[in-house]
Image (cartoon, rainbow, N blue to C red; front, side, top):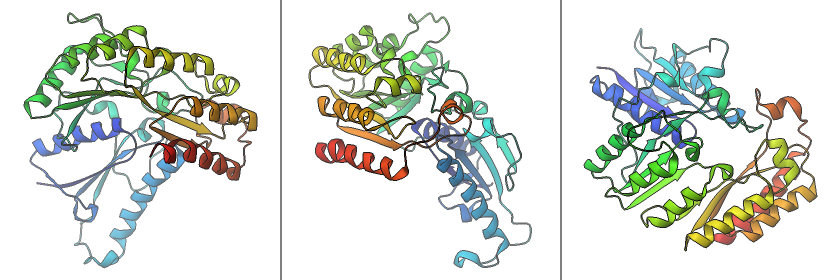
Length: 352
């Protein structure tokens, strides 16, 4: 019986993957531990959305290997002879790395983590249920299509079975997750038309107090989806709808397929059809070419839409992305920080 420590970096998709990794070792009879110093095997589920996230992975690997070399380090007795830990790296870093990483014993592609494994859920309130993996949108700043690959949707019946199992275990809430849930499109299924509104409706019809989904893109937010949300009161009225920038030229450079006007029109349509709806969003400040006028267009959107929360990110070039190759990072960090503060004060502090 091995002692296993699992460290997860990044988004809810990675968290859901780690729940299956956890179950895999549990079914083998291994023991899960909460401290990497106690483990025989350390599994690192990596994130690469920003280089800082990638660097945290390298930092943890380095920390573990240094700990093993220094007798009595960190106030812990020295390891016995032959006590080196096995480090397994999985997650989004594996597909984009072209070399062997020092200190890593095994690199496991995320696609090898089977949906057939019933997850050991970390969140005891809401069950996270992946409906797709990967992305076909290729936003210019984003590494996900390269790290997770093209979008692949799970079969509807598989998802519904997992929802049923979660309900049997006492879960009253589920969260349907994917890089872009509303482009969900499985292969031909006998259950439905094979689109996200149909899937969402089937899940909403089950005995659940709340059904949520994350994350969605504005250009895939159809009238059919709005109608389904409006029809079922147990579908969460807090919708995460990233807009990233309020400036049309910046949106074009980001390869986001809408304008400010399109986004505002969509929000107005959703508000009209779904009473009590609220919104959260993602915003990037300091994207290449974002001058003060472009930034003020983003401020304008935030003033027109009262978001519950905005996840605001300061742009940094990500190696391997289109924006890093084509555009100079020409907004000084001090200016990015200033813009971040303005939006944070306007949206997050004001909403609290």
